[in-house]
Structure formats: C-alpha cells, structure tokens
Image (cartoon, rainbow, N blue to C red; front, top):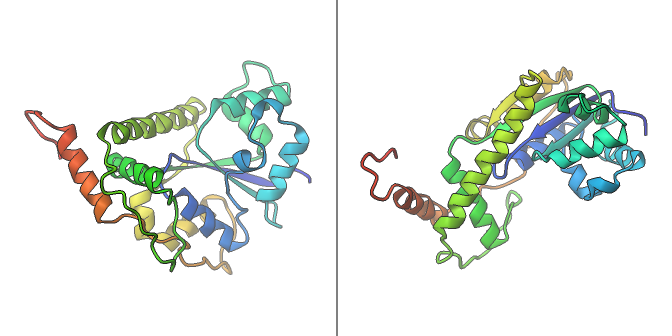
Length: 242
C-alpha cells in the first residue's frame, strides 16, 4: 500500500474514551479506523519492517487516504522508526513520527478527574470487563471486596505520567493538538466527532456518525470506591481538597 495522504494519532491514557472515539470516527467511513494498530499488528518494535508499516497503513486507512491510529505514548516505537528510516539523532521525535505516519495531526485525550479514571481502570482490571457494547446485559461481578487503595493510587499516578509523556512529546515540537476531554466528550458525543473531522479538514456535509457503540460501566461499586479513595487519600489532612 502507498502512504496515506493524511494521518492522525489519538494520544491517550487508559479510561479516557479513546475506544468510544475510535468506533465513532470509524463509523463515518471517512476518518480511517484509529485503532491500536501498532499493538495489534506488530507488538515487537525491535523487528519492525517497512512491510509491517504498510500493513498497519492498510488496516487503518479509509478509501479517501485518511489513516488513523490511537496510541498510549511509548518511546520504543519512535526509536524503532528512527532506526527503520535511518534518521539522524537530531531529528525530533515528532518528525520521526511523521515520517512513519505522513502529514500527521495530533489529538490528545484526557480526563479531568484522575480519581475516577483510576477507579475505572482498577474496576476493569479486577472485573475483566473493559468495554460493554451498547445494549448488552451487564456482566455479573462479585468485586465489591476488591477495593485496593495502593493499586488505585498507582494507576492515578501512572495515568498522570502517561499524560506527562504525551504532553512533553507535543510541547517539544510546538504541536498544538486537538484536546478532547472525556467528561465533555460523553456529554456532547456527536459534536465532538464532527469537531475532529473539522480539525482534520475532512469534508463532513454528508457524513453521519453512528450512535455511541459502548455503554457506561460505572456502577455503585465504582462510586463507593471513588468515595472511599477520596477519604483514604486525604486521611489526616488538615485541609481536605475534595
């Protein structure tokens, strides 16, 4: 396959709505299929070849030449592309990325409430339920006793470090991404998708967006964990912040 005419990367941490956005954009038929192709198609960056990259382009590109990818930042992939294309050490990371994914634009997904993010992440880990298709019957989980303060605190910290790595990558090259905030996205689903198409300069006059493909997973157990973590994390604080 030839190179895509336009590429974009959705940079995300866990539990920020990236899969919901992926499915919504793919449903338009004009915005590629921004999935985690680097992980799905070729998990080992050390052995990555140009033919592997062509396969990735093919998986994520729609007939209008638009390629989409979503990615939680990992330096090892940039190093692999630098080696593959024999780029000098002084080539910026953004230039390396755009060599692999031509004319690349950047979308940054975040979530304001990192406690709820971390609880959602931990709930997914202990339940094994990462997504639920809209209309599916909720799975029965006996996880109420699986609260773990240290695990949730670790995931909150990890999400912040992942976002810091993304922000550092973008800031390094003066990239101003389209920022999508989870809390706003779920409140204004279709308009957010259309905003992405506008950002990518993709004509959208005749484009339709499928309804949300995923159902909400948050439940009473998750809310109980949020409130418990809120109390535990501020134990003996003189001035509680939340």
